[in-house]
Amino acid sequence: MRYCVLRNYEGFPAHNQGRDIDFMIFPQDLRRALVALKSVQDVRIIGYAERPFVALVYLDGIAERANDRELETDFDLGLTWNGLPFLTTEAVLQAVSPYRADGLDFFVPSPACEAIVKLLSSLIVAGVIKEKYFCQVQRVFADDRQGVMDALAPQFTLKTATRLVDSVIDGDRQKILGCVRELRVSLALQSLLHHPFQSVAKIAGHYSSGFMARLSPRNQETVCILGPRGCGKTALIEGLLPMLHSAAHLVEGRQFISRSTLGDELPEEVAEAEFKTKGFGHTLASMAKIAPLLLREWKGQFLGKMTLSLSLCESYSCDLLIDPPSCYSGLPRWYAELVGKLFPSPDLWILLDPFGEECQSMEGKTPSAQALKQMEAYRRFVRTREKYVILDASQPGAHRTEEAYEAIVKMLEERAGRQLEKRFAFRAEARPAEIRERRANQ
Image (cartoon, rainbow, N blue to C red; front, side, top):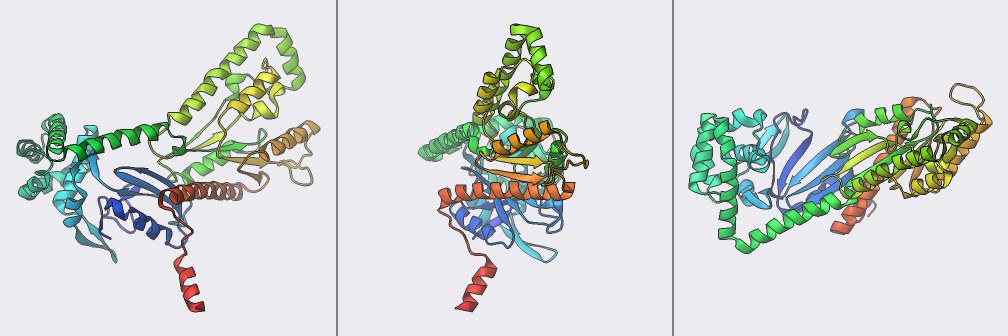
């Protein structure tokens, strides 16, 4: 399979300058590349997202260090602006050269192609210059001006290519930024002139895939951490975030609903007394606070991120179902239960149970009857969910974090596996060790 590592490979294999690895391959080789990844011992695919020009693959198990276990691997299928290639895959892969780094052998683009990629990937797409690459790009453009011009010629007019190359060699950033509009117009006209029907199809595919990606809830994974107050939900999320930082394009910790939004948590008898005192107006105000939050959550489901995102939520929306009247003053039970059912359901629920079999709390004190009743309500609720795990909150924090991490990664792996099976008709691939054992038995 013909491939190359596009950029940031100078520190390989010990150091990665970016947060990912960019491979360029032909689109028809994508399935073979994924099969190769699946065959790597102890490495799991935990996320997959695809656009016409790139396939994003998120891996787990690449290192033993807690904060370096995941890696984003991007398979660039084309170098495009709005679906139109500013440098063809064929041109890049025809000019690759071998590269050796600390005993590791792989292929990289020619200096001219690599410089063009580093410049135009941000310039023509976003209208910005990446300063960390600029000195290297300028040096290559000056040393191999004709080679750069030859690489740009098929996609741009001679005038446009000449103006860009000379502006980069001169180091005039204002002139470079002034080339953006001309580059886009030239690329569009050249593409439509030489390949009209194919170019129109590529533009349509680019915008339609972007539209579907924004509207698809498949790009978002949500994990809900729940349990009674004081069981360590916030600490668990803070411990998981650095461990999962490369498990998706965006990894964040947030809340569905904050208690400060809905009202203070009060004992049941106090909440009832306050509800009677403040009257119907206060009830309407409390109900009105929740409606925009419900709308926001559903809007986030269908107007989501362009690429994969993972949210770890210390969620209080489930409290509306588990213990609605006593948690929030002025909120009618029927309304709390209705809204709780209407909130979008997370992909995985993690319940922290602070009470062991001997009914001892984390501080060694016997929990109250009300606390036990509330905990039993949490257990009953979470067991009705499709995917859940119950963790012993009395265990050491590191142990609890590892258990939660494994549950999340397993959920992500299963979901990515279903996507790959649907997209490529994948089945369980045998590992190299399993293949050797099978051959030995034969």
